[in-house]
Every structure is written in C-alpha cells, then in structure tokens.
Image (cartoon, rainbow, N blue to C red; front, top):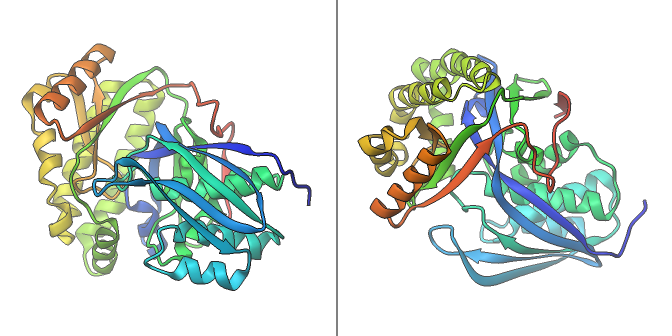
Length: 369
C-alpha cells in the first residue's frame, strides 16, 4: 500500500434531497422500490488529513442550533480495531461516526496506520437535514482514500461511510452518502437485496433554488424510529413512500431534465401534501413542523417562488424552494431574513456545472451492499 506523509485537502458538500425522502429505508422492506433525487450544496466541510500512529479528529463545535461557534473539540484513539469499535459504539462520543468509518477502513482494507484529520472550516448547517453526519463520514472515507492512495470508486466510499455510520446504531438510510457526488444531481434507486443504482441527472437549464435553516428543533432518530415502527402496519404510509413517491420522482426527474422550474416547484408542493397527509401522522410530535408550514404558507414568499417543501427526514430543520428567477430568489431570501431573523438562507443553483472541489458523476454506477 502506497502512502504519503503530506497533508491532503478534502472537501465534502452537504446533500439536499429534492424528492423521495425516506424511500431508501422503506425499500428494504421489499414492498416497493425507492427512488429519490439528490443534489449537493455549495456549503460543506473542509479538512486536512495526514498519516498518524493514532486516529484523531479535530473539528469546530456547533451550538445548540447546529451553528458553528469557533470552539474546537478533539478525539484521539489508538489505531486498534477494538478501540475504534468501542468508540463507535459509545453514544456519548461526539466523534463516534468518524470512528465507525475508521473501523471499516481498518477491518475491510487492512489500513496499517491511522490519520490525523482536522476540519478547518464548515459552513454547512448542522443537524438540519442536509446530511452533515453523512458528509463527515464521507470526509473520513475520502481522507483515507486520498492519503493512503487506495484508488476506491465513489460507490465503494459510499458503502464504507454508510457501514461506518450504521455501526454506531444510526438508523440512517443509503441516500445521504450521495453527497460524495457534489453538485451533480443524481437519481438513486433502492431495492431490497439489490445494489443501489446511481445515475446522474443533466438539467436542461439552470434552476434557481434556495434552502432555509429554520432554526427549529428536530430529532431525526425519533422520526426514523417512529416511521419505521409504523411502516409494516399502515398502508397509507407504505403507499406514500411507495407508489405516490415514485410517481412524483418520475415527474420531477423529467422536469429537471427539461429545466422546467415551474413544474419542479409545483411537484414540491404536491410532494409536501403527500407527506403531510400520509407520513407526518406517524410521527406527530416531530413532524408537526410549525416553522416549516408557516414559511410554506407565507403569501409574500409564494409570489416569489414556484413552490417548496421540507428537506431530508423533514421536521423543523430545513426548507427548500424553487425561485421564479435569480432576482426573485434574492428578494425571497432577504424577506425571510427580515421577517424571521433567526433563520438563515442559502442560495443553490442546480445546473450542469459541478463543484471542482468534490467528486462528480460522469456515468451511472452501482453501489454494492
């Protein structure tokens, strides 16, 4: 195995699920296939990595709302399988996801030494439904790949990151690791006991979007637990995450391919209605989402957008909108920040342009389980 002692710079973007949230884990029950559309954010995590005798991670600490504070925290663990596994299983360990990925690298790829990883900056909203935890796992996997020159494919890194996060007891699905593709929009297809199919989407024109940190509270673990516990007993939930979601994703795929922002926004409104009626009742405490619905119902905002919906597991974490054009997007974000000063807005332009700092999809690939 070839290694280098030089520092390696790593960037991983966040992930915005445009359509098809929760269909990744639902597909594992074998009743329906899952389909979702994902794109990367301009925001993300920057880090440096180098070889070390131990596995250590240093990062900036978020506040209670998931916003960076400038404070730092560090973990250092001996490069031993039992120590990494113990750290990954420790629910009180801030860096347990990182340790889980490191454990997968040691046991699956025989890496003989650890890494020193330092997250030098972050502008990705944390714990807001834009896959900050998956971004960290992908970052660790990419760091090992780059420093140790493993030559792994994106779908292999996705698998390592997924298994590392699952090792901690997380109930995450498989869509989050698509953040490895950066700003390239992708269509993910999930089916029980099958590989994940990943296909790039090529927009027919620029789509002016933005997403909003609602500055609310959500518990993704509780949402996933509630929905998964209810899934087998409730046909409306099965239909919402099955045939209803598939129909919406198929239409949204073609709308994005045509560069049709108006249709994309209209489909977001329809997708949110499907979610509110058929999914939210099974986690009522978490998915009442008063902040999200207040924003979606705002008439001034509606005049500047074609539509919007929740993000990720949903709840009062993040909202996304399709603006009528770039000027209307700027006006909408200004209005939100003035009327809701606790919220933060982030522009997102979906186009053929990919982020040069992140991986890009050039052809369909399959991710082996």
